[in-house]
Image (cartoon, rainbow, N blue to C red; front, side):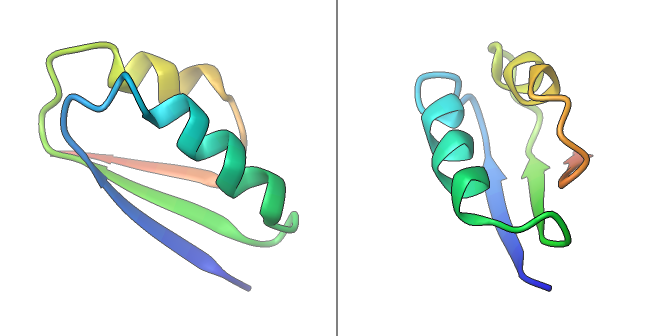
Length: 60
């Protein structure tokens, strides 16, 4: 199992491309753990739109 950890804050300009690239390289049993530091832009809605079980979002 591979765990990729990311930190985000108002990263809506980049998060979609980042997640597409990372998820493409992972297997079904891997995960992406994203810690968001209170984004006020569309970062969270973009992450949630992926609806991928490999993504674990921690909102802070």
